[in-house]
Amino acid sequence: MRILVLGGTSFVGRTIVEDALGQGVDVTLFNRGRTGTGLFPDVPRLVGDRQTGDYAALSDGSWDAVVDVSGYVPRHVGQAMEALGERCGRYLFVSSHAVYARTGVGPGSDEDTPRRPPVRDTEELTEATYGPLKVACEDDVLARYGARATIVRPGKVAGPYDTSDTFLYWARRAARGGRVALPGRPEQPSQVVDSRDVARLVVRLLLDDRPGAFHAVGPADPVTLGGLIETCARVAGSEVEIVPVDPASAPPAFPLVRPDWSTQQRSAARARAAGLPATSLPVTVADVLAWDRGRGEPPLRCGLSAADEERLLAGA
Image (cartoon, rainbow, N blue to C red; front, side, top):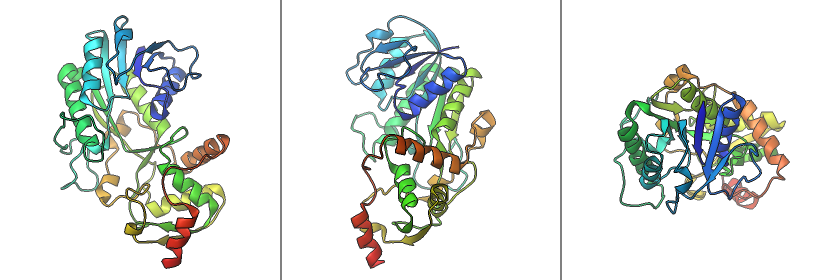
């Protein structure tokens, strides 16, 4: 099988390429050539820029499938499809759970849950527009390719090479041990999926030529946010005491804290039946901590500083 990956050098895209190569798939990359330049030296690279609409490098060649892991606005997807024409078999679009309606959704929701209205009049990615822009992208892929379209909607993805720091914040904090400030409730459900599980699902769907939409969620067993923090501590060999604090006293959109718990209780049944693995949370934690140590543990871009956490704990 020959696949074209739009992106492929950052986190989820990188992991998809690694999995595909490990299964003997012939991979070609299309990206700007600015990141991960030392990765995959034997993989052909086509250089272009989706932001400026430069798809000239795709004017020739054909592939059995395309994996679009870097499309965020309808223009990205529309221009890629126009450049490729009919020179690809299946188009797999990596979307997001942000496409779903925010109200009236209960635990165990599946891929047929109502989505938010699409947005096409902006390319500014904000909390309000990200999901609706992805909805528009999904619609365009389905309109163009029909039964040759596949949609993968990951939840919160965790694993090595993740520079968002949202999962890593808790892994690092738990590893330090002691009293841990949680601007939320320990009993909140928490769904994280290992990036390697997402990659295996994507490649499996391509190899099986399977259409449809699929949730990529984990972990292997249901876990609460408090349980996730305690698992991180056990893996690191530390002990923690979780101290709930007022969410209003911490930065907004705090790592893994969610006011709507139903968004952390989505069904993985369809994806599991299609080949989504179930890596255990301790394995993900151990591998993330090892990767972080190997890169020298650079400063995090989210969460609480040690000083800010001490102030919150003092007032708890």
